Image (cartoon, rainbow, N blue to C red; front, side, top):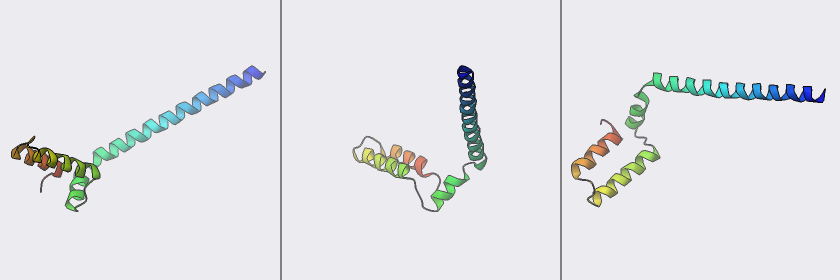
Amino acid sequence: MGQDRRQRRRRAAALGGAAVAAKKHHDAKEAEQQAASAGYDEPTQDRAAGSMTPETLDELKQLGELHEQHVLTDEEFESEKAKLLGPA
């Protein structure tokens, strides 16, 4: 009788774990779809408002340093900077 009870508990735990994993997968898919449906409008709005992410600022600093060290030409620097900042 004790083994039967343990087996039922193990099955319940396995099913519960599978349900949690399925829920996480579903939530991730749903978030991905929402992000895809939003398009690229949000980042351009953020940039227009003047807010930049810390990552973008770090990348700009690195580009500036590489340009000052003459690793990047003026054209390369301007091109990469334009990619980070997007259209003006």
